[in-house]
Image 1 (cartoon, rainbow, N blue to C red):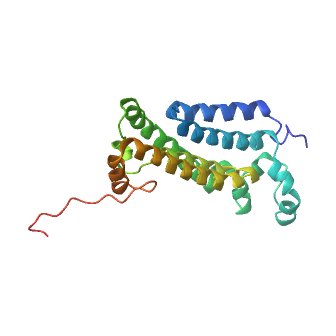
Image 2 (image 1 turned 90 degrees about the vertical axis):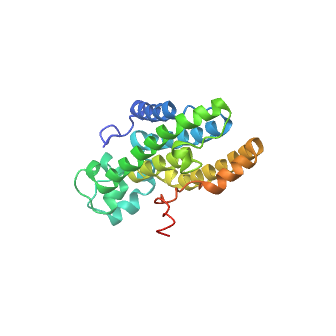
Length: 220
């Protein structure tokens, strides 16, 4: 079977898809600071590696081909659909694009881009005005932009896991956490006690559960 027959070797399609998602993220994010550019650059590298395997050369399927064929002989590992490894491993024999992991990936990717589009205008206005971003989603978490990138990367990983993305995913999560800490040190030097109070009031990545209205003195 030729690579093009199996849905691979389509490097132009790989480049178009990678460029589309990178531009889509950039249209929401528009990096300004060096921290913004580093976070966006890591996201872009992950996307390029993903689509290079999805439509270019299926490195993961070639490396694991012998083991996969021996343990899952009922699957045609030369087909393009076989790249949806989670659906194949868990016995989803229908169209993998309607499989549970593929649907979950859309939820993560869509949620990540939604969070990015919600957070960036707030951060952009604050950066232009030289103040802290504390309204909107920044009232619930301090680093929604990094949470958004991790959600999108998680969705891609569920949809089409590869050896390269599996290895790079935890590295990227660690790198985003480190960027957030460096960003906080920069904000502490710029805003001092105001940012220190903000750090005490608002969690970094996981928003706290909303509290109900405080009880009246009589109810208390």
